[in-house]
Length: 120
Image 1: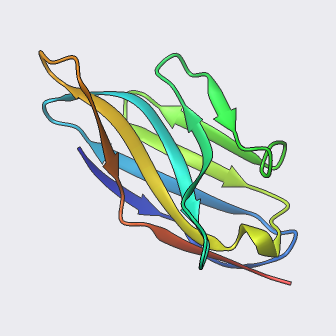
Image 2 (image 1 turned 120 degrees about the vertical axis):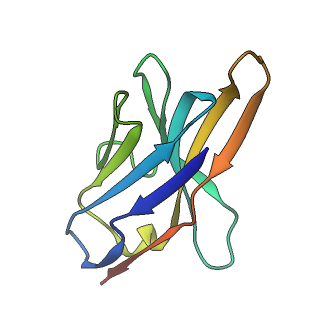
């Protein structure tokens, strides 16, 4: 599975950004998709993900401000980020968990990362 993320950039605090991630999945069935982020000097952390049934999960730090959505036909996942704060500044990574056709083990895939910078 190859993941191509886009949509990062510079925004002022209180502003909005939309991240998108497109997956090419030949030979795989994608189960869950989501977004993680890694700020300088910190560990990568879950921002939000959405499972195969369309049920989203958010970290407490973004709950109510970010919305994750998924297009199952197009194999894309989007993250609408609103009311951005300087502490949201990080490299955001698209993530997918998928199984190869005919197999049951789940593999994890990562996109290349897109930088989000929120100025105060």
